[in-house]
Amino acid sequence: MSITVEISNIAMLKRARVLLGAKSDDETLELALEKVVEGHEALPRSTSNNDMPEEYWEDLFSEPKIRASIVKETVREEREDRY
Image (cartoon, rainbow, N blue to C red; front, side, top):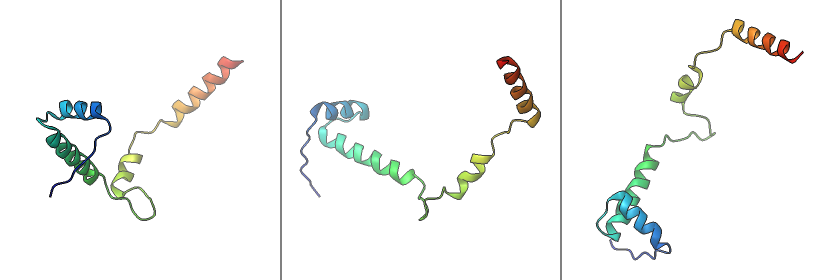
């Protein structure tokens, strides 16, 4: 299938051509489209209620927590420094 495309920003096309290592404008557009499609396919599908995917919850809450004693000591030192 062949499609005619009008490029309004030739400088951007030239930059993309260099970045993608394409030999022609046609190849540049094909490679750019492939990259866009691959990028969107790699994104996880969101649920209908816009919640985070299940596999992210564990990573989100698996960060080490600051011990309560350190928090209390830091708050105490901060208060002492103010007065």
